[in-house]
Length: 147
Image (tube, rainbow, N blue to C red; front, side, top):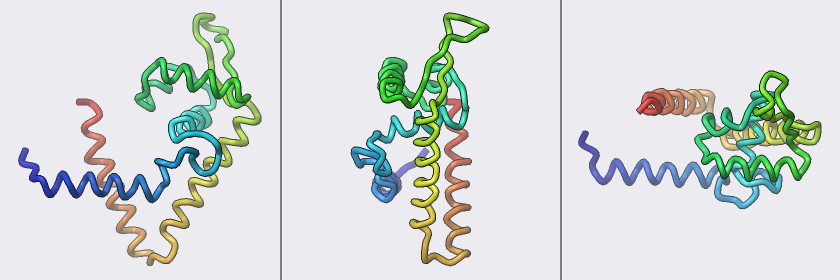
């Protein structure tokens, strides 16, 4: 593979650009008081509705001990609850509490609003071009996950 310095620099610049646009480096994502990683864990649990920590570790590619600390914090904050599985009492099922569901809904809504605001003022053609480009990037990079 022949990657010249300009291609690498452009890709890195795009990553920094998009990270800044989404505010991923802000201490608290979308003014929630939670970090980007904590917010992603809340969203993942919300999408799965009920899961085990291993699902989260695999889906988000986060270190197990770090995930454990996040789950402990979210539990102390009253956002998640851990219950022993009726099928295997060695396994804890994790789900959002009503307070966690409210935050999940807020994160979802604010994330959608952020994208709408980002694309505001663009033509339908420009939006479709950006959308197609993002899908193409995801498709190409998705092939790397198995490596």
